Amino acid sequence: QVQLVESGGGLVQAGGSLRLSCSASVRTFSTYTMGWFRQAPGKERAFVARIRWSGGDTYYADSVKGRFTISRDNAKNTVYLQMNSLKPEDTAVYYCAAAAGVGGSFEYWGQGTQVTVSS
Image 1 (tube, one colour):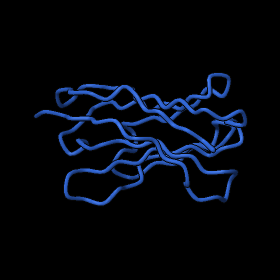
Image 2: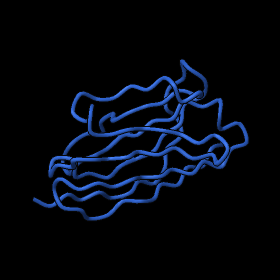
Image 3: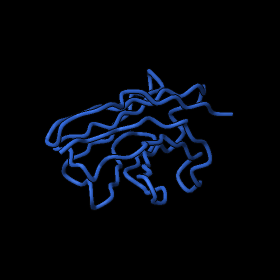
Image 4: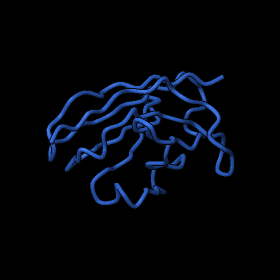
């Protein structure tokens, strides 16, 4: 069982930055692919970014490419999402997720953290 706890959300003005953190309670954290998703009001949950076990293999949604950076610290069992140049359309609940290995689906989810970007 993997438990994920997000933190770092809040209210920020457009153009500002936030860093989200997700702490995982699992001994084999380094073997998991980690991802960030978001759900805006009235919309379905959408993929934001993911990072493989080594940290060198990342992938982003087109809407955040060049503005968001996903990273991980396997020694701290933590994955991060640095969000720069935030826009009002980035407003959403952001969820951390974990997938076993490389080809697994995201089956473990955090409770989410709210990010609100004001114009």
